[in-house]
Image (cartoon, rainbow, N blue to C red; front, side, top):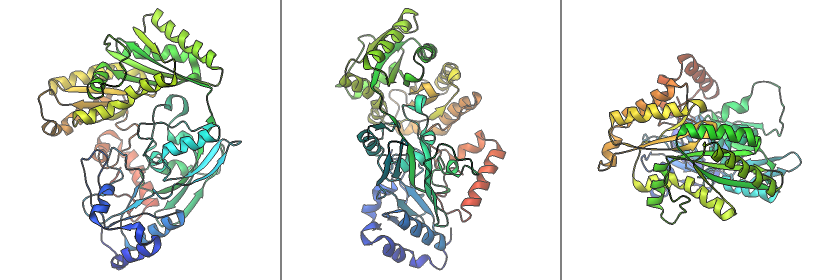
Length: 474
């Protein structure tokens, strides 16, 4: 992209807008903003800009638009698909929103909270709890990811089964457009049928259409009880049977249903030996189940005990451990949350974030596992995820004795096997991580041309100069 004549004045202008301390051009100081979370890619940029509020964001974007300079919006830098890092051209400005971290309003009567895009997810959860409410979005990176990034990727997490993705948890947005205008769509309404659903365009768009600066979020009553169980199973098909049984018996009380293979838990035990080992025996699969209830804790305990008991009596479950304290519950969840950390400690692997019709998951796993073993004998599949909503993290590690870097050379071939198998079930190659630059070139193979044409038309209408996070998604 070629600069306009204003290009040589860009950095002094931006410095005047945000202040000397908030325009970073020193390479060592910029380094953390240019590298992706997994440490596999480092881009380049003219500068990192950290505006203080929506007004400054708008002026920064307008200045860059006048100079025809690309903008890469950035939140907590926890993304996995190269969606928030610049390319290697060095032409872009990184627009960090971490200073936009204020909670503007909490309305318990309307069950809403208005927050800025740079708010850390865990801080939002804590603020909601302090008001006697619940913000249910929960994921492993919640201590560092920001709500702006969650919205931009339509993040999922562990409670989608009951509460939905981030899209379902948002009522309104404030957005700085690609022209530097501010759209105030911060409406705390559950019904608003006055035109196109503009909010929906920006959620999940990964900063390619505009910059989300604030949002109105839904809040829920705090559950009186949250109970956790780890259930041992003989197969993914058994996990589906258990899910169906629990949905019938527990209804909306079923908040989370996570699938983990025995290989996953062996990996965690190897890398984190101090974590609990709930079973003396190894089983092929495990389901981590969470129920939350607004009834009494005794009633919730009776429900989970009777439901898991019914699964054991029916032969659906092979064994089960029920947490009887908060500490035990946290211990069981740590097993699930430490799977990605154990993978990282064990070495590099080829990651997939896929969604499938829940009913197709057992057949998908059998078919895809076999195809990978035929192509790469001895490769190790680390499969876990949110089975309740059909989202699996299906990761492939090298065979024992094979170097991780040499195995990564086969990434395209591994991706083709996995993604073609996903497509055969009419699934998606990105469930909750986004597309970014990592999966961009895969889209033409798996999306109809007419769908991509509509996406390009929206991009051209809202960002005609093509400056918003270029090279991502499209």
